[in-house]
Length: 75
Image (tube, rainbow, N blue to C red):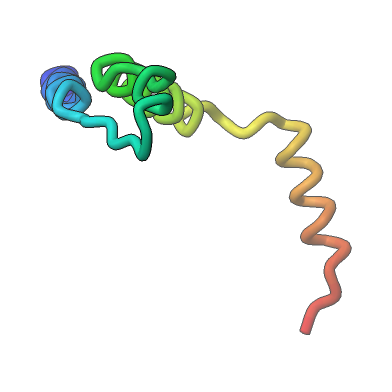
């Protein structure tokens, strides 16, 4: 699995490097991040999102969901 994850990371990095920025005016082009910066930020956000999805649901939320399910009227 480690090799699959590494390959996926490498693919995301290559895809991030190929990302281009389209702007509507020269002012936008000056203020926009470079394609490399956008790609890196996107890659890091995807990695953080994957990490968050793999974390267990906190007990407090599990209890709240359980209490909510019990309080809903059954049809």
